[in-house]
Image (cartoon, rainbow, N blue to C red; front, side, top):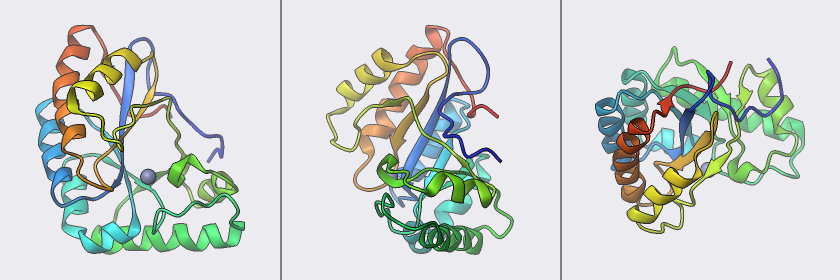
Length: 198
Ligand SMILES: [Zn+2]
């Protein structure tokens, strides 16, 4: 398992990967799952352990819909100055929380909160998780309004980009609505949606 931070989608040309952080969220994650199913998109969900503990049934729904899982730490802490041992303990605790919700879950990816990687890429790789970054963030945490999010998605995509969005950490209704509106436009422009590169 490589510790290099991956930020590219699988395949060539106009292909992008959608990733969603900070969930599971009992309101917006199920709505997002409905949108992704309607558009036949498989995404990566970066889960926070404390949210997993609060909403395990939502994790089961994410897996039932065929999406991939990533570890996003227990409490969304900035790990920049953490020792490898402290990071490992947190990442293991997060994976255990996920596997209490979904016992046979495959947790393929890790993303450091805030992209503050510190020593975490090597720790994640040693635990079998590929560090996954992003090339496009649309600032949906602000949130700037659905129209603006759609504009940022349409204007910001580049071939092979991993795109960072959020289904948790606050009201993400705008993010869900923006995905629902942007995807058909991108498809009409011959963009395809894929998982991250291997
Ligand atoms: Zn996050």
